[in-house]
Length: 152
Image (cartoon, rainbow, N blue to C red; front, side):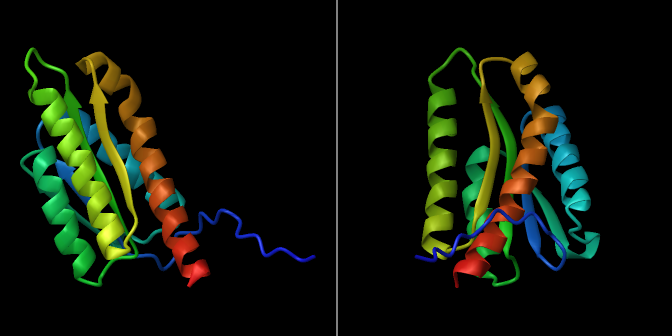
């Protein structure tokens, strides 16, 4: 029996990647962006194949990503941001609805979205994770774009 196995493919050359970043908790967002952009370059995604935009907060990410996905201009998208627990229930609403919206967009459009919206208890946790999570999101976007192309 010969099984066709689709191996992970992190070759970014020729892929068109869109990145949307929340400006809320901007320092952490910038760290996520740095990790993401550095990794996209390492994976050979050309600067000219990357479109970057910012939005006010995590709740604005799904609509922006949906519009990007529906444009037909991208092989994959990346969501960057940070939702940090405060003293109110608002943390749960923002983190849950943002994640749900991002998941809905990728399922409804067929465009993969690497979700790097950190949800942490405090700034310190986010600061420790931001560079690595940004890089992991770049890897996930490239791998999923290549996987979906291989499946089709």
